Image (cartoon, rainbow, N blue to C red; front, side, top):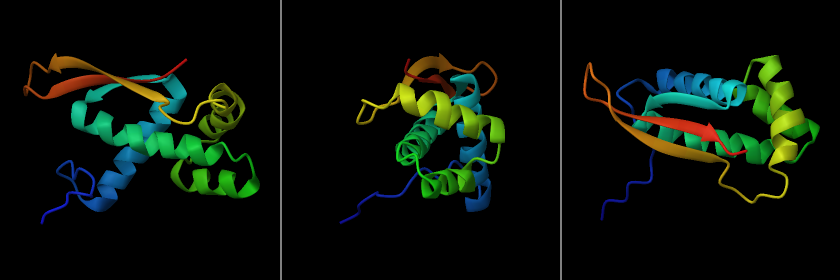
Length: 117
């Protein structure tokens, strides 16, 4: 029986995919809303929600774990000082995805992913 437990490959190598998710999560935390393809939005949603959950522990190990994925110090500061207190009472579901339709150039389905207020 086939069980698809992996993530989307997004037609790139594993190193490129990891870098892509890190960059998308950094942009999402910085701007709180980004427009991308639907597949990338779905992948970065889970990735960023895991980071917010880990950051919610608010200890040194949590900061180190998040710093492995997010290298921008400004974004790290915003994550721990603004976003974590905002979602303190929530158990999950920190992001929302809106489907936009297809992109004109290549007919890729696009979406907006945003952090909930």
